[in-house]
Amino acid sequence: MLWLATLAATPLISEHRFGQLCRAAVACKRPVELRGRRVALTEALRVQRQDELTICGPGCIDGSGHSVVQVEGTGPGLKLIDLDLHHISAPDRAEKRSLGACIFARGRGAIRLERCRVTSEAGFGLW
Image 1 (cartoon, rainbow, N blue to C red):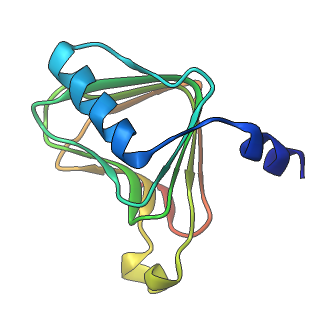
Image 2 (cartoon, rainbow, N blue to C red):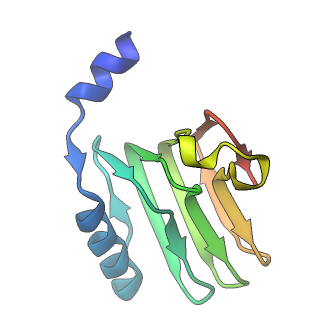
């Protein structure tokens, strides 16, 4: 219950605003700093092969889509520092092939984790 009370008190960044921050961070080659805030995603945060994105906590990223973060290709990829990543189950993803994952690395995608906690209610933590 303490986790639930902490979650309710954590400032929330909208999915739209978070997307804007991530695109700006890639363009400017600077990190996104959550500074104790939380993001709730309905679609995966996608990092393309040419992108380099760093997201720093403390903070929390929750996702109810197929995956919370998805990295593709052989580029620099994604670096996550001091974050809680939580993949939330959804009724429309009940079948094995659609369960998804908290972190989904495709086609030699690179993801660096430092002091992160990765959880998945249904599906894989890392795929």
